[in-house]
Amino acid sequence: MSATDQEQLAELAKANEIWKTSATTSSNITLTAGGTQSGDLQFLLGHYTESDLRRLIGVAKSLDAFKRLDQHDQERLLKGCFGSFFVLRSVLSVDVNEFTIAILRQNGVPESTIRFYVDFPAEWRRNETINLLLGLILLFNVEVADLQSAISVTVENMKFQSLLKRLLYCFCDRDSVRAETVAAELLARLEHLKQLFPGGTPTTHNSLGNSLGNNIGSGNSLAFMPQTIGQQQIVSASQLVECSNSSININNS
Image (cartoon, rainbow, N blue to C red):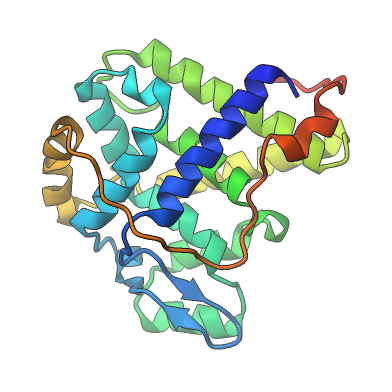
């Protein structure tokens, strides 16, 4: 992978740490086959807190590309990905089996959301790097309407999709065909997720969307407390140095 790729991975690692170490929120859930359950599953029904909102803003504002956008575009992008981003991140800590599916149903989680968990490729459920990359593709959504800097958002979306494919090339033992197949499947899961949250933030909770401007523009630093979730995987740039000199022949379109 190139030096630019490694810089982007370092930025991803920073964003991921902000997510993991931010204040405990309702969306920090764990649901395993062994009966371990923590967190409030109500967020899967669209019940978010101000702390959840600040957590996502903290991740977004750690990215130089996001900070370069004006506040109007920042607000629209955050509103556009709010619900889908949290469901995607919860893939890391929700095991898929009869027990957990029953718990989700008992809590009134929609079948469409449960189907998203079931259909998400098992091999990549615990990979934090891939998960966060997918989340940033959701964040820089070129389909969000009324963007002032639509071209810049498109460039960032393509950049993260390209990095996703190159990472998968490394993870798939430099098998470009398999990497392309996996990338297509993961991006298809994102399209499914966007259909579940066509307006980003659920309409019944637009009061949170209305407070985005205050949180983004306040300039106040966000307070974070240690929080670790599960046995998830984060890949550093140094772990991928073996791919640095590889000849990667992947269609980045």
